[in-house]
Amino acid sequence: QVHLVESGGGLVQPGGSLRLSCAASGSIDSFWNMAWYRQAPGKQRELVAIITNGGGTDYADSVKGRFTISGDSAKNTVWLQMNSLKPEDTAVYYCKLAWYRDYWGQGTQVTVSS
Image (cartoon, rainbow, N blue to C red; front, side, top):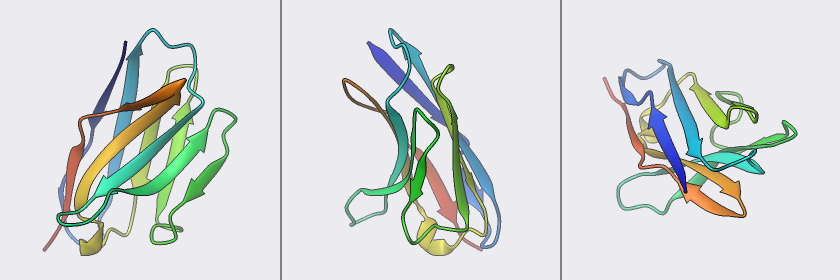
């Protein structure tokens, strides 16, 4: 069983920064990839950023240049540094780990508002 725990969400003003963390525990050797998704009210869940075991990354166009994903495959941990936050970044952010199947965290709320 694999369990993901996210942290770091909260309320921030536009232009501010937050850093999300996601740590996996359980019977896992090393992830294939880990990713951050987000879901705003009334919208579908969307991919924000993804990192592979080899360190390759990709981002949604809406966050390129503002968000940075990083990870430690040995510790099965991933982070999302979010800078220059905008109100439209407001959503519940979910961590996903892929290792034979997809595992999801419980989500952490990010609210960008003045």
